[in-house]
Length: 467
Ligand code: 6PG
Image 1 (cartoon, rainbow, N blue to C red):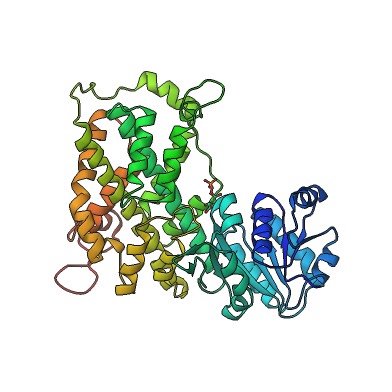
Image 2: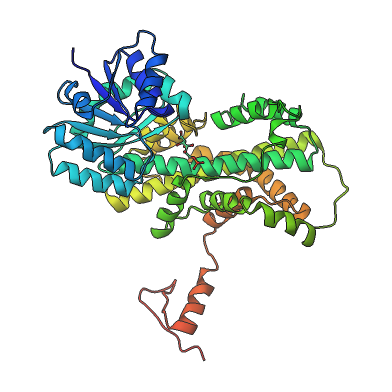
């Protein structure tokens, strides 16, 4: 019997995707460049319909036409080399899917090259990590719609399911799927940093123990902050180090790595005049964190404020930080969704914002309860300029903004850095400023560079002889 799908790349993600497909009744062919990973997967199999191949030609020939090959290898040159080895054995109408974190511009190049050969190409954003890959990730496919339709029955089956809906939807042409995944990761960076800042406040300002903070996160996860990242934060804080018995969080070195997707999000936003300040701050916070040795030296040289002996009312401030975190999250998602909207117009993609919010409700890292409200906001106003001005979020943020102000002010006064909480507040206040100081910048530009300016009271372009 011919196989219904092939998976190339049997690292943890690829193996789990293959197992997921097999569990959903697919007949899966698997192949890896080195034999060892294939053998490791084979050892784990217990009656799943997965057949290993050790020659790429045999692997391809074992597939039912139109052939569908799901590639799950490290983004970059490895994808090009896999494609290169597949192409000689593929025919018109076959489909290659890239499920890695590829840059969307690479996906567009590959799409064009394969289209000219008659081979369909889907750039598929996959979120959910190892567990998601096995039990149901969030899936963001981009490419030609007719090509998507060939793969859709399998993709929707292996995706996470929420309220009977698959967390998989057609995103748009060419690189749109990988673009949506890239910005998902930008939001993920911001969300993680905001949570870390809330943790810092609870620990350093309210002097709570790691366990008490875990309890707070657990409670928050039962309310409107309910989300995967809040949930795992509570679990992380409960974990003890086996060596020392200390909370594991206190043993982990405070230097953050990154693999590039958050950086690409910032670069794309910067290149295209899209305000993604919270996402970018979260990236810079990672860069600053990695200057660990310098930070330790600076800690002994640079002064902070005099310590404030005044103790804070715990219950009140736990509520303020909850509100601050909520507003920060809304602002971060608002920036990500604005990036979708502006890029969709720029690239003529027609991104389905309402559906993107829906498929983020399950499987992915940024899954959160309030994505239902985000989706509803776009359903009510498909051309909504910014989530912040949707009636639901405008009201919520109006109620909670004072919590964010109090926490940011307290951080400023006590010398705690809140890169993303303060960026959220700045974004919120800048966005609601109808008349801004940009007039002064325009005047300065015109003064020293004759860059000209427009007037508020009449059309046209003006220059003043300032001296
Ligand atoms: C996901 C994750 C996943 C991953 C990235 C980002 O959606 O499943 O975003 O793709 O976590 O590798 O990781 P970095 O923090 O290393 O950039």
